[in-house]
Length: 93
Image 1 (cartoon, one colour):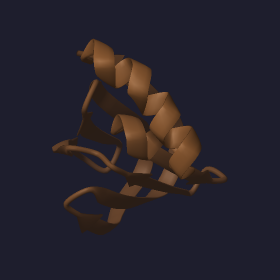
Image 2: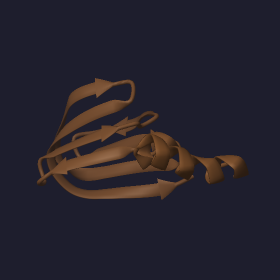
Image 3: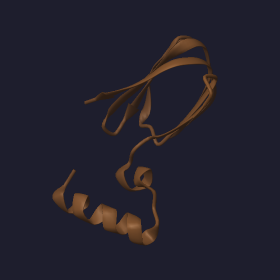
C-alpha cells in the first residue's frame, strides 16, 4: 500500500464514518453458527468442491473447509455458502 494511503485512509474513515473493510478493500465475513457463511468484497472464486471453497482477496486467499457445501448465492463480490463449516483460513500472497 502506498505511504500516503496508509496515512490518509484512517483519517478519511474516521471523519466520513466508513468501515475499515470499505477503506482498505478487505473482505467482510459473516458466519452464522457452523452452517452459513457470507463473504463480501472478495476478488473471485479460485476453487469449489463440496468440502472446500477458495476465494481470492486483495491480500491473498481465503480457504473454507467443511462438508456438504452448497453455493446459495454468488455475485461478483459476494458469496453465500451453506454446509457444515469446520475451518476458515487466511493465506497471504
